[in-house]
Length: 140
Image (cartoon, rainbow, N blue to C red; front, top):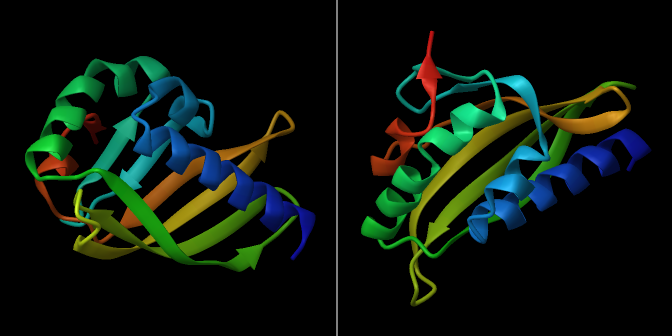
């Protein structure tokens, strides 16, 4: 594994730990802005600054709880393209209930870049479709 891939994976793992603990600061620390996501319903979502994430963070957390979410797991994290300042990671993510059962599995692509000597995610695309998908962003 190259150091670039290692740095991208480390950034992703920190983001996921922040997501699962609902620590918005930890999540924001792993994101480059503006940040874009192509949703499971093919809607382009944009967060221009950390304030955009914070604005609807509590609403997203509530929707996750309503669907019975306790954590998200990631499997098969693989780099399929890499360069000195950009890494494309693909993975399978699973939403998990409190009894450990998986209730939503989806594929996702994350593009990490090195900007100002810091690795972070700049773009995501996933096949996730659920209640929490429609919060916490602006659209183009």
